Length: 245
Image 1 (cartoon, rainbow, N blue to C red):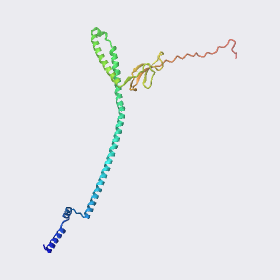
Image 2 (image 1 turned 30 degrees about the vertical axis):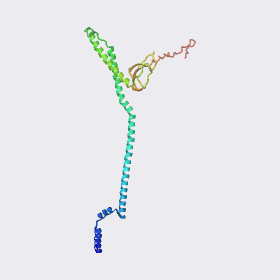
Image 3 (image 1 turned 180 degrees about the vertical axis):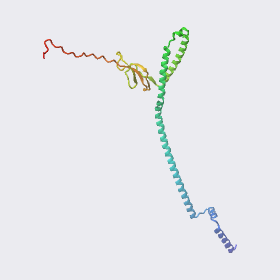
């Protein structure tokens, strides 16, 4: 090949390289493993910007997560405080709800006891005996008495399970905190202010007053005041004579 032909081919190859687009040139550079400094610094600048942007996004996400964690921690602390307060208030709420129920139960117990006492003291009338109804009445009365007694014992067990006890009042001095004097009687054989009869039984619940007791209290009569004789006028002496004026 002569020199002119070589020169012509080189000129055509230079022209081809000059007309080659940038993308193809970059591919060619990658294929050949060569990179210019401008491209290198451009890539480094772009990479630096991406790293900076991602760092900001990560920092923002961490701040948001930190705020969420703090909110969760605060909520958990508040929830724990509310649970502790609810556990502390539960016994008081239970007592406040149970107290009126126990009062109704002791009222029912008193009525059942009074009804049982009436049934135990009942006696058939003379007419029922004459007409031959005494045996039938006694059988019916016995069945009702047994049922009343069973109900009364069940109520007593229920009150005992809740530590409800009767308030001792008979023969005790009047306590204004647990008793109310509904009636007064006068007896010389009993001390002043002593309870002589329970009109309505009082109850304690776990050492706390559940219902006041209504009682009859003795008040000794006051001793009679001795009568004071009226003053007498002095009588004139026999030696004295009235003046003539």
